[in-house]
Image (cartoon, rainbow, N blue to C red):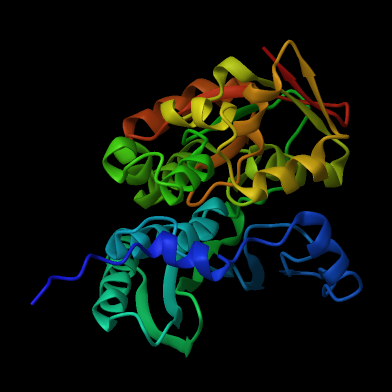
Length: 344
């Protein structure tokens, strides 16, 4: 009997019309007039742009978030790990502790169920690592595989970290390099192997728990996790409601080694283009090439935290991050002007 070649999950999804995150402008139009208003002790995240919705229960705040997507790597176990870590990140970005998780599964009839078992095992390993309890989930048949997690968490009201609250003069600290959207696109196109980009894939499976702990130890102004709208998109969400801007120093922004060259050669996801189109009127570049700007628009999966912190606490924060094995790149500063400026 001839042994069958292993299924390439990324190619399977690409052929089936791989699901992509909604473009920011499209999502705004779809949600216009539908977002519940924030109220006393409540934020929907649809209105506030927080990473998770939250509601006060006395001194405790309940956090809720959800995320799922098609495979970004071929290894099903690693895909499950990345998807779960990505969903858990929303809770960590708000300073919270994950409590419970529920699986969300879409799976084609023609794929072997052992692939699904491996995906669920990978996700379950990260849920267990976070300390949350898996409570079940929901599954449907679909033309392409998708997996993610709905997560509930908690945080003391006084320790809640929102994506609002930054002040002009705050330093901006990033905990993971950029470029995984470019790298996973290269994987789908078979321009690189998973072994060649192992460091980036490992970082995608890494929980942002250590970064959360460092934030709570030091005290920060605001934070968000960098995911589908890229560094510039999520920074814009962090600063926009208060009319603030920022200056980013491009050389200070960490980017995975292969990502910059791949992006410059035209290998990047469609989401990068929609992010750039949405933001380009607000972004100005000073002595920075278009190719060097690409990683800043790149949609991330299970990216790091972007943290605004009082300049007097920057050294304490970077030391606390480093002590936990986390990245700690000081990439720029918050400004009073509403533009996002990128300098060399």
